[in-house]
Amino acid sequence: MSYLIHKSETRGQANHGWLNAKHSFSFASWYNPERIHFGALRVLNDDVVAPGMGFGTHPHENMEIITIPLKGSLRHKDSMGFSEVIYSGEVQVMSAGKGIYHSEFNESQSEEINLFQIWIFPNKQNVEPRYDQISYDWNDCQNRFLQLVSPNSNDDGTWIHQNAWIHIVEISELKELTYELKNPNNGVYLMNIEGTFDVLENELNDRDAIGVWNENKIKILAKTKCKILAIEVPMIF
Image 1 (cartoon, helix red, strand yellow):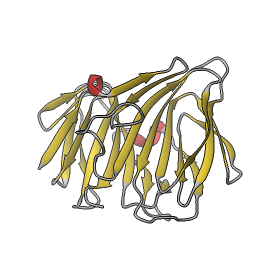
Image 2 (cartoon, rainbow, N blue to C red):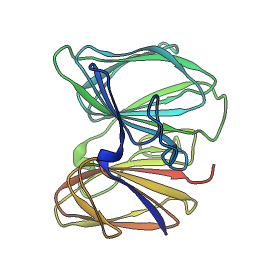
Image 3 (cartoon, rainbow, N blue to C red):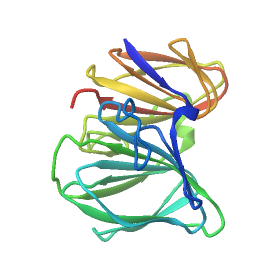
């Protein structure tokens, strides 16, 4: 078994006034040679965007981009013709493939939005760009790992071009759950959204994270009620 710990305060930060971004991995002007990626997981940004502000039209290619609003709503427009609003309790997937342009703005003129944006390296290059959006219910992830993303279009949630899975869970205080990896060549990156839990004799608090690989099952003990995002990705890709 191998693992690494990323404490919340060790993340990179860029505060542009309209955007306060925390980077789990090297991104834009923040570079840490020891934190380039975790397997196929390239980016995990924790963004707070001011009312009415956002990212103007910009390109992407050959990346699986997953956006999960934690609070607020996000206006998305892209070169495929999609113009959608993504709310808290929804997940957006964009396969950039051979190339796409898009913009993202806080839909609200009065409230901040807080979101996770995740980039995962794809297992296929130059595919046709694709957009998808799903909703989920927090009631469905009470003490169970609710699947949001998988490699399979006929599975629960949405899908991406990679042997990766994303789950979300809310664990009751003092309850223990076990995350079982879908693929023995994968690792899992557990981002603590809020609360406190123990894993591998380490205590993780709000926005702390742990990446585990060379292990098929990971036990999680909630010391308080906690919300966790589990991102399972290939370590060799």
